Length: 263
Ligand SMILES: C[S@@+](CC[C@H](N)C(=O)[O-])C[C@H]1O[C@@H](n2cnc3c(N)ncnc32)[C@H](O)[C@@H]1O
Image (cartoon, rainbow, N blue to C red; front, side, top):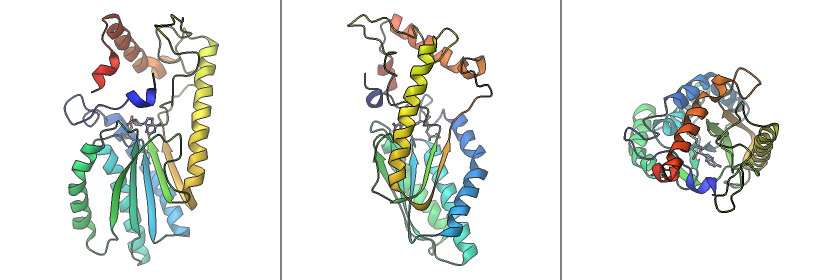
């Protein structure tokens, strides 16, 4: 199964949608606000280009996508006003995997542009928001075209199930991490190594691609959920994965295809 082709957050805005179930991720964005602000202000002290590229990688859909962009725009606006200089033209790229619900983001763009015009007035430089579907583990943008790259709660998504851990009903392989979808207390050392190697491979690809796309003096703001203990198998690291694994296992035992519940 190609993970990046099938997995996505629930679309729309009904009670099961990501839009209505992303409070934890929203909290993470607000916790990072002060650090983001410092990084952006530092970048703007050295150089404010006439045209600025901003990308949110793994934007998903729902209020978090555009609220984060609004915050970054507010920071740029405040800095330019302090300096008494015009704001740059902004090119905002919202990236996620191709099956993401970009349509619902597009639906909220008119209100987003209206709000910008109302709050910032006509002297605010134009802002163009567009979608960039594709994997952030490869190239997404032209060389040196981005000045600010943001990604929150997304880089823990691996590009694939680590080799050796995937199961194949057809080939009747025994899986190394039977019945689990994460590093649990019952997982062998090999499972831990397989996950960490996959993360290293993916994260290196991510950094390699961004190193070409970010302009000199640009900044990158990444936030990820952490854990207090270096041990990845403690209850507070695993509790939610255990619940998810149990739900998936019982769906499989009832012959329900878990990916059919994503649409
Ligand atoms: C938990 S959501 C976070 C969304 C948003 N950043 C937030 O804070 O609410 C993670 C998002 O990352 C996206 N994602 C996962 N792997 C990706 C990849 N390789 N390239 C682009 N997006 C990816 C998923 O599709 C999903 O929408």
